[in-house]
Image (tube, rainbow, N blue to C red):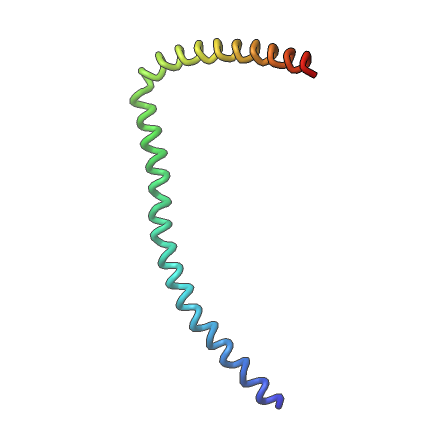
Length: 91
């Protein structure tokens, strides 16, 4: 009986060996994914290059954007305070 019980475990390792090639096949599938990963740095490089080229324009735009943002911030703070007061009165 002990010999019989020892025999079944032997095929089990064999199955594992068969599944191993499948894993390698999966690895091959992952390789394309790795090829896709380098694309991401490329996009980042493009973004960096774009910023370098547009720095002159961005500087002018940024100045305007900052002013607009400050104005919006002030409005938001005022409206926010007003909103809190209204909420308090409602409460």
